[in-house]
Image 1 (cartoon, rainbow, N blue to C red):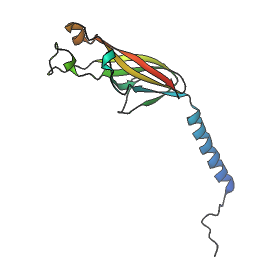
Image 2: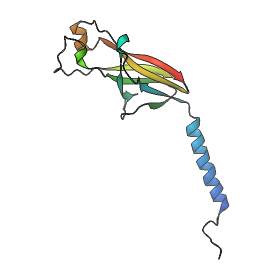
Image 3: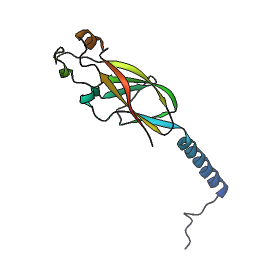
Length: 143
């Protein structure tokens, strides 16, 4: 008894579906893109700390290890991930959220690690208004 399960009734339609799927997949994979991510760990000896990427071009982001973005200029909104105990001037009970924007130009096939440079000798006023740190491009690498 011969099975009709694998029998193709309209081969032309199957070919068109295959070509459409192929074109969609190649256009997505051929799109030029890179990645942005927070640096994986703080380097306290250099006063460089982690940030959390909250938004890319104004769009809220889920927590992820890295974010794929198209080539060109992008605006990252980052939040400093720093324990307030690094300075005696701030008490542990204070809740400080310091968010800043950071512009980065993405090149195809490149990953950008973003961090924060801290002025550990900043006066209390700078600590309170957030001017004691700035987002930096810590490292880039091609893949």
